[in-house]
Image 1: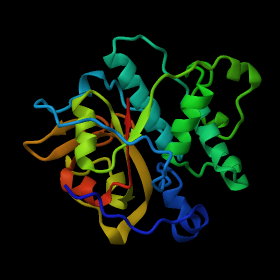
Image 2: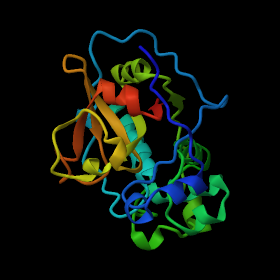
Image 3: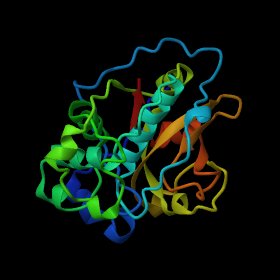
Length: 262
């Protein structure tokens, strides 16, 4: 199976110049990561006979509201799925805590002073290296969006023991799902994606109506239909209870980042 086709990378400044901030910087927030020697390349082996289905553990979808926190939302949801599947009653970790430190890793003034999204590797590193307090200690409230967590809140952080591995193509993402690992996926979405009343299955994005980068969590593989279920962070009223099915071809064509949370 061929790796997904890639478009030339845009740096943060170019991204802000070419996309309409009134549309792209709210309810989106994914910035593409270029492949790096730091990536942990997965070795999942052959796809098991039974395809992956993590929907029993996915819980209610998050709602990022009018923010650019989709990457942090997808990571925290994946961690929660991982914990639930393992039978651990761990408290949900704070989404805004990891989002703050992910932006700090970009080390740009514009990122720290505004809600402009982040890169998945930065967010994964932030959650893993900084730990995270529970959501109850630093909740998802708009008034905290650009605030630095206090030292008291930082002391409530717990070490997170998950690992992350970059999937180089669709087959590896399907292997990860089959072995019980949620996969976060980032791509450039069009304006029809934002429509909560759209179709149950997305087969492609309109290149002439692209709005910006977005990230969600793959939670189910359906090889008979050649589709994957994407859990979004737009709340339960979006599409099918917060999820939508995407075709294998769409993922092969448009996925810029695929990361398994193991």
